[in-house]
Image 1: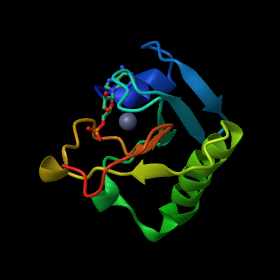
Image 2 (image 1 turned 180 degrees about the horizontal axis):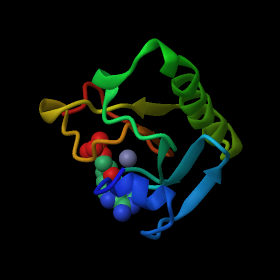
Image 3 (image 1 turned 120 degrees about the vertical axis):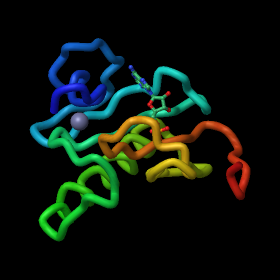
Image 4 (image 1 turned 180 degrees about the vertical axis):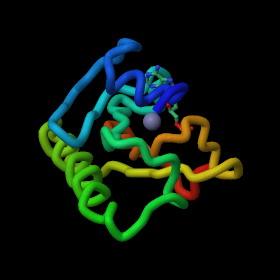
Length: 113
Ligand code: AMP
Ligand code: ZN
């Protein structure tokens, strides 16, 4: 989608530090990491937010979530990690292409701010 930052990363119009890619999913390091591992896992197909999901998206959402778990496992993050979809203003969503934050490698506080 035009003017979507993450679509531009997917289309290689903007550089990113890519850690995983297949036909449907891309994962790259967050530019402003909040933990030793801070990876964003995104579907290649543009979906603006969780509010836009339909039943037909169940499979891709599952793939995104399982990919985050696989990256954590690959990195030996066995002590714990967090996966977050921020949705809309109060949650601090700034990029309207769904992305799962994978945070790990340090102790994480709860509840988040
Ligand atoms: P959210 O606030 O949940 O919408 O998350 C957007 C995330 O995208 C933030 O954690 C940003 O640091 C990250 N971000 C913004 N621009 C880039 C970029 N060019 N490459 C990688 N991550 C980015
Ligand atoms: Zn997009």
